[in-house]
Length: 228
Image (cartoon, rainbow, N blue to C red; front, side, top):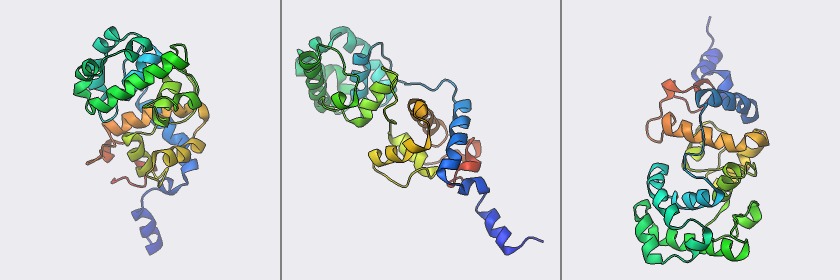
């Protein structure tokens, strides 16, 4: 006979959904890795400098749009020194379609000037030096370190990572830095860069903002927010 206690438990879904984040994290990573074996940085780049420029442009803009803009931009400003000498009006026109082009232009020129003058034209490879550059915060620094320098210093937290990690109850926070601090202890350091790519891909394809496709989700039995 099905007791009220058992009925209540069944209504809440599989016990795996109620397991602590640390218990669910390894399986979450494993399943996402199988689901998205080709997950990688969606921005096109061939050097740390190019990735830094593309990442700054990607704020409030799709990676697809950025990838349409950067080829001409990289031809025109092939080095930090060239970008540092750019005329703002010309730069603004080239990146206008990425949005917030005036702020981004100032950030790009400021960043390039700092790299040319203070780092001999080489993009820094430490968190401390990167976040000192104009227009570069921790998220951008994590993108550069993880994807251009293969260094796992942190986890990139964007809107997709925020949404998916909250729905999975891996964090209760809304601040990106606090979310990153919640996620890092749950996963081995060597998984941090790939984890962000996996969460972003899952957020784009399945765990979308308005109508998540829970019936197609490989994590449904591990997710407290699942609708199935």
